[in-house]
Length: 369
Figure 1: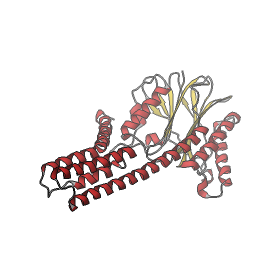
Figure 2 (figure 1 turned 180 degrees about the vertical axis):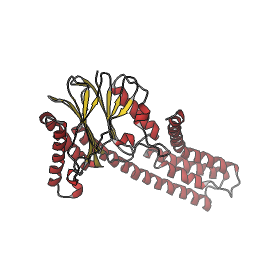
Figure 3 (figure 1 turned 90 degrees about the vertical axis):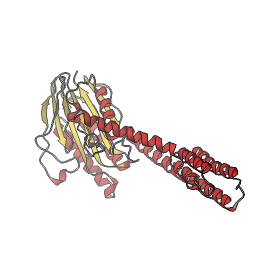
Figure 4 (figure 1 turned 60 degrees about the vertical axis):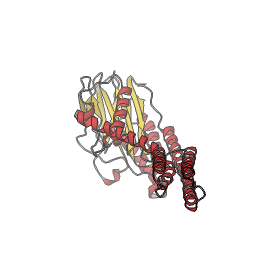
């Protein structure tokens, strides 16, 4: 993408940031404009709608104290204007003052309800994220002679986290990795992640081939699905990519099950997608047919980095609805280590989308030193 494409999302992010700052200043601006208007216009003109609007605007944006202070400022402004005009005890003035005070009470009530809802939402997300972190620990930076980095970026769109997963295991057959994305969100997806990670940890040690490892995961999902009573109690399928890095060999064996292909980043800045020649169904959908798994080999030379990711990266959109293209974005660039690569990607996706993505994003990078 050209420089114009990069400036567009950044500019959009700045506009969003400016809009947020303006929204927080709006209650104070309404009171100030209303006060000036009432102070310099004849008595028959009134800015009471502005004074009433100020606490209502503040309710979802400010704390309870901030909303109360905004409301008091509105009431005080109305009182001062009436005092200047000498009409404090007039019926119309008392009615206007009572109206603004009533709106302030309603604004405080709205603020309490909004804050309570936000607290419940945050609590639900913290519980779900804690559950996922318990089954999805971050791998060590060095495993089996390879440099490793993993990163999980939760979506900011809602409180339901996704079922993105990753794991790295050093085995007698080489270092084995998995990155996957469970269908759905919430605790059902976390349960599926727990099943898959547990099955991967065990099968990675025992199964001689990567194809057999994929079949073990397939059976684990099917077995767990039969234990659940309701159809939606367990997420039924998972897209995944499995990678095996034999010790001492400059190759990577890959099994892709309906998942975005890994990217191979060379030391010269080249980027190549390791797409499968035959596409297979996601894990958990083996009963629908399809041939047996077939691992494909690709060169993995010294200094190269293998990037595995979920579709939260490749399906991130900018303000114009354009997808983020990691292959194009990374072309011609060289990173000193996997951690720097993932940190840069995460930052650029946030800039590209204007602050948040619609789906969770799991990233796993491994470099052959």
